[in-house]
Image 1 (cartoon, rainbow, N blue to C red):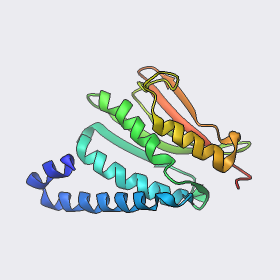
Image 2: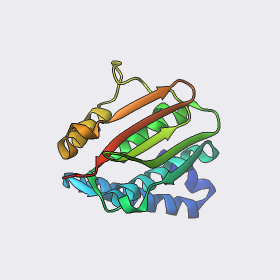
Image 3: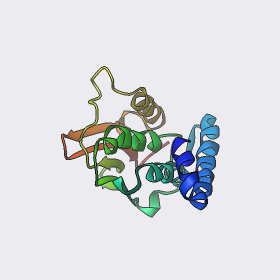
Length: 174
């Protein structure tokens, strides 16, 4: 809301657009009791969130999404991607003075399709540290409940280069 408040003064048209995205974001949050959504719905939720964050970070945040279109109707637990993207921004991009990039992409693996959220900061708090987020624990639990342990939420950090958070949508998803 602080971002929108600041934009209202300098660009009312942009502020209206941000309010529409915020509204879409909140509507998605109200669907929280739905256990599974399509990857396409999850990406729409993430895009609403990213539009607001881009207004906040202006030229410090670039986003690239490259998801195989054959995956868009696959089901996954509600609120799987947005917490990963939020962590990439909160623990990664917000620490950069310029050139922050968040990539969301898919990779084919023998057991299924891996969905990856990657930033170019490489400064995420390791999962075993005391400050590691409850959000990641919730995402991991939702993935395990939906797909079993094969989905395994992975976090790979190369300091000052990248953080990759990923999970597997198995070929034989339930």
